Image (cartoon, rainbow, N blue to C red; front, side):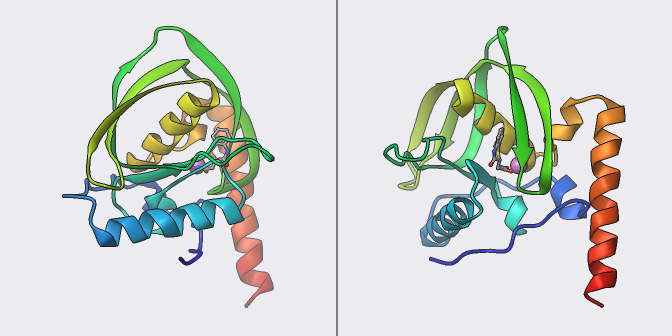
Length: 174
Ligand code: GNR
Ligand code: NI
């Protein structure tokens, strides 16, 4: 396993559409394992392949709390088959938007179809934090960040802050 560097905004790779995998083979399984290691180290509750610079439709998620049994999920080509009319609001963060948080409204429940690490088609119905996290990760595969779901005012505040921080970092490390 290997820990991979996480891309932060602004970066054009975070706005691209990721390509489906043909099948979950050894290479994709290694990517899933490296992404889980990267996610746990961050720490985070989800990670999408484009966040580590790989534009493929692969995500990993584990919403188990500290002290609970880990519940790692590895999903390739995840698709929302159904989303509830009922909505839920969670305070979201993103490893690609470090230290930035905002309340985001999304469908409270969703039925997801995906390929598991054995290349088998599976479906799960998610609710609560798991539903929010999976939707957040699928958004990444379509170049969408949580700030795209909030007001332009809040979005621009966050994106300007990150842009400034990156420029400062470049200057400080030049
Ligand atoms: O670690 C993460 N926490 C989180 C909190 C609320 C809603 C979504 C998330 S996902 C985020 C990790 C991440 O950036 N995944 O893409
Ligand atoms: Ni994210």
